[in-house]
Image 1 (tube, rainbow, N blue to C red):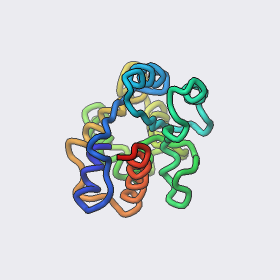
Image 2 (image 1 turned 90 degrees about the horizontal axis):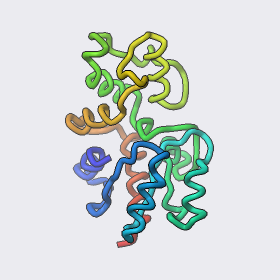
Image 3 (image 1 turned 180 degrees about the vertical axis):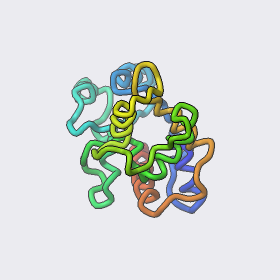
Image 4 (image 1 turned 30 degrees about the vertical axis):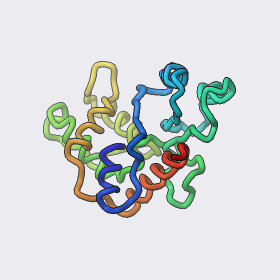
Length: 190
């Protein structure tokens, strides 16, 4: 997110405010703990989460217990379709804000050794909504193990992107991320 923010700012677009700190929690299971710890210190919080297609009970519980405002809970699906920005859509992960080709480029670079030079092409990826889930199905079908527990490390791909971002992003990707950053920035009046 910070790398994309820098790309947008370089083009005169809206990026994340400098005072926004991103804390990866490692999934919804750990969000409650982080919100409790950080919120207890009086910090203003927002949650951006991957969307499986239905509201998450854990997030409802945070709102119910007044640990976070419902306005401060955002999900990736709200920013994937430019026609419905701000509304829940199809299941989506943050990775789905990128074009599939760009995501695959960084996925293939990240796991080049494990893929033995057999880069995953867009045509190889099974149909579905979420690129992460689609890639995991592809790896399972091909018998490619990227880590013993299955799936792949999403942070490794994000790190690859951050260390070698493209010079620019296409207009739709820019618009998706700019909408996300405006939403986050707007949660915390200056």
